[in-house]
Length: 145
Image (cartoon, rainbow, N blue to C red; front, side, top):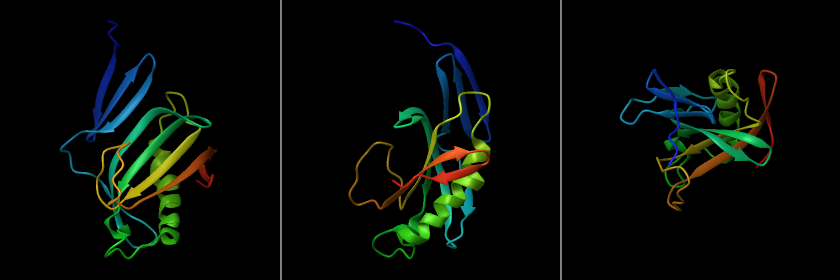
């Protein structure tokens, strides 16, 4: 059995693990999440970052947010309104948190869910919206999922 050696850093409730094979960021369980006001007027809550997975075009980083107002029943934000929110989150939240120290991701995926669900778990009762972006300079360019 091989043992990975690396460095763990905790910054503002986020665990950053740097290993020879890559970088992993994740929210520390039990820590309060940051809230962000977005263009639709809803307030979303940062859930987690999933880093280190390959996507179609290479390294992909996923920023996951809770957005209770997108719920199918009782929500007031539809997909078209949430598209502007996801673009805003990529440009104004995700880009500033992507480290220039490691490999730059080829793609950023922003996801909104009306309630928390474990990454990779299907739950038909949860409303989820996703958008994919490539990074060009200091901007997120929509790739259209």
